[in-house]
Length: 291
Image (cartoon, rainbow, N blue to C red; front, side, top):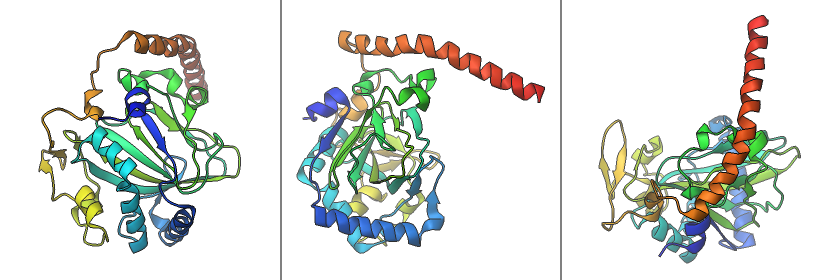
């Protein structure tokens, strides 16, 4: 049965998945990897993201497996995504210094993220923000002017936590990264997943998992189990039972009265924001044409 917080809010938070000592060791490993592989860091989202870290360190793989096989985490993932869920990415994200943030958005159908807190993040600066219950809304986020981070930062609930904690959220939830004006380092171990029945494009590293020191990670990240090739280098995840997992059930879900009331609040804001955005765009384009 799917976790009630995932059902109603689209996300949940779990305390003390790793101990303080374990998390400190994990932080040291990740800091070393960010220094060693600095040329692989992706900065396109205004934060430092080290991509595809599984297999770079044996103890790191041990801790990734320990997080994913924690009874509370494993049960939530299997009940929400299905037993055959697959790992898409395993990255680290460090939001440091002045962070412009990331506008509110949705991701692909069937996608969910596991956010492990490498250090304590108790202030709404440079952390992920979510709009509770928005996974039950239609897929309209990218069409809304209010998704701009200058507006959405006031609408999102910050995902805060202590070192060693873990959050799970469905990527259909409207989410983004809150801006930061302070010199803080927020460190996250980010594990992206896809549920049974969904289709995804694997990372290049998934084709050869021989360097990964965990059979569990290999089974979830690699391409040898519970997959069938479709087209354009995409794979569909085979289902372990006939019905869709909850992460797919929410696609095209009918709106009830409570959700319509919540959604109308954001439409009300949009009525005011869209004319302002259109006016600003017009002025910017006009200035460019005159220069």
